[in-house]
Image (cartoon, rainbow, N blue to C red; front, side, top):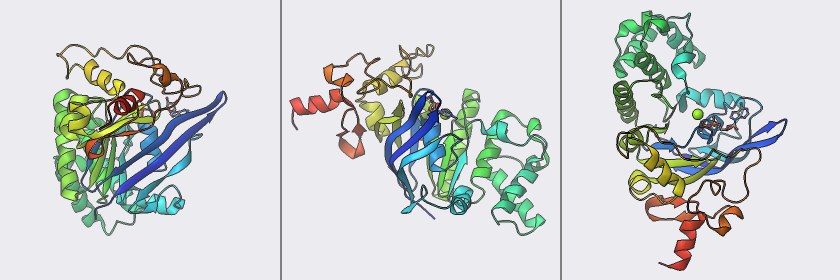
Length: 326
Ligand SMILES: Nc1ncnc2c1ncn2[C@@H]1O[C@H](COP(=O)(O)OP(=O)(O)O)[C@@H](O)[C@H]1O
Ligand SMILES: [Mg+2]
């Protein structure tokens, strides 16, 4: 089955001793069947929190403070725990950050697949499960014999493939992968992403990929979402966001990455990400923004809407439009 996922005005809070950290602030986007969305942004910008909230897997004290996550029109935020448990893996599945380290070290790979199938009522017989696991391993380009091995007997790339195979075991229509290739070397990263694209196409599933590598993202994604301090600051088709970035933060992200400038080291963006407990007023990027104007420290900007669903929250972009009306 294909599904449409709509995230609307999602808010996530972490009530901490020193106050409330708003880790996800008014995030909205729609993921169409077969679409591949890349979520990028510096560490701490709220990417993982956004997707964990969508799957209702937030660690305490995190809580969804508002918004909806509609999967084929059904709000997962309001769903019962049991509905949500069943939806995971079978409708929306997650390859978590650091997934390959989350494999149980004392269980053979095959046993971990069998446990998953049992937990979701997809277990018929040992023979059938073995065949199913062999097909899943084949789908991610692993030998069936991998089922008889322990995680420590596999390379990083192989473990990550196992995690992808687990995520597709119940044919979900949405696959969410949180930095699935970060710990791998460049060649293996590309291979694993190619595999992810292939299984995604076979299932006609949509994918949300969280990652840092803008070059890899530009090859993988149809749509890019840029997060800063819990906000989705720029969103749109990859050719718009990378070809014609509008938000100063997106421009700096692209310029600072070695793959997009010349093969130097990652330069980073000057300054530090703001505290989510006590964020600066106005646009949270204004303190680091080279082009900030007076209004930037006052209000959070409205959203500029461009071609093909390109959206940007930046005063400079909305101001320019006001000065030169289309
Ligand atoms: N378990 C937690 N307890 C308190 N705050 C958290 C927790 N997890 C995340 N946060 C807050 O959410 C912010 C975003 O984190 P995260 O979603 O992991 O970012 P990213 O995946 O973009 O690196 C963090 O900077 C932190 O303020
Ligand atoms: Mg993360």
